[in-house]
Length: 220
Image (cartoon, rainbow, N blue to C red; front, side):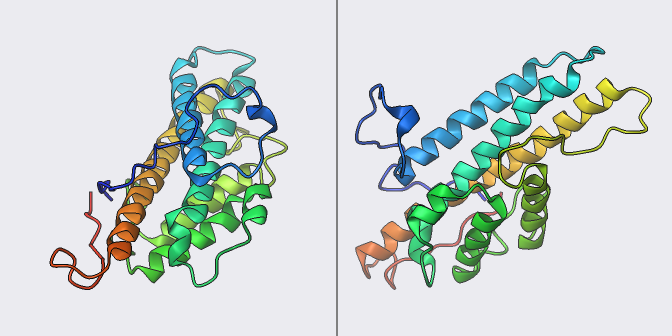
C-alpha cells in the first residue's frame, strides 16, 4: 500500500521542542505516538545493522534490545492508528485509556482489521510477506508470542539443535527485522491513507470526490 498525501500532516505536533517530563507522560496524542513509533523503528534498524555476525557467547543478549524495539514500534504504530483517524471508521471506538495502557499487539491489531474491513481495503492492505488480513494476523500473533505483556523478553525462534547457536540467532534476527520492517511500513502507509480518507470525507461532497470522500489505496 503506497502512502497517500494528506492535507493534514501527521508529523505536526503542538510542542516539537525538548520535553523534560517525557518519561512521565501518559495519554500521549496519536500524532506523537506515531513519532515515537518511527523513532523506535529507526533505532531498531540501526542496532540490528550494527550486530556483529561473528561467534559470541553474548549473541542472544545482543539480539534482545533489537526485538524489543521492533515490538514496541509496532505497538505504538497500532495505537496511533486506533487513536488517530483510523478510529473514525470503527463502529465503536475502544476506550482510549485502555488503548494507552495495553501492551497486547493482538488486541490492538483486531481494531486495525476492523478498520480495513469497514473500508473494504482488504486487497490493498498488503506488503512483502503480508498478502491478506490472515497473513497480517499471523505476523501479529507471532510478534505477540515473543512477549505478550511486553515485560519479559525471549527470542522469537528457538535455536536449540543448531550447530552454530550464534549464527542461527543472527539469521533469525535478520529475518525478524525484514518482517518487522515490512509490517511497520504497511502500518505507516495505512495511517497516511486513513488520514487522507478522513479528510476527504470531512470536506463533504465535491466535484473531486463526488460522494464526500473515498479513494482506493494503491497497491505497491
